[in-house]
Image (spheres, rainbow, N blue to C red):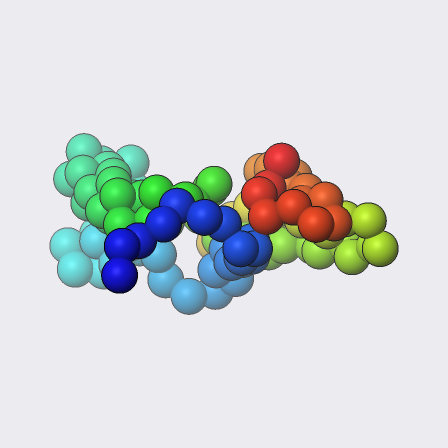
Length: 110
């Protein structure tokens, strides 16, 4: 059967609240904090590229952030607010990364 580009709905995947991300795994493997290193960026960018290539319909993807999502359901739409949080700094403020909405009867985020 041929694959069709039809959309039938949307999917919400939240950021990791505590699970290690690719940048943290690189730090663990190298044995030192490499959060801003070129090697770490290469790994993170490679994972992001492969993930997006295999899932071209994805609206957002960031494999190096932690956070949470607040979802509001109403009869006319679903709205998600994605927040990033630095889990390594207890005093860090959360940051709104993006807000996505899908209207009733639609199959695409706006």
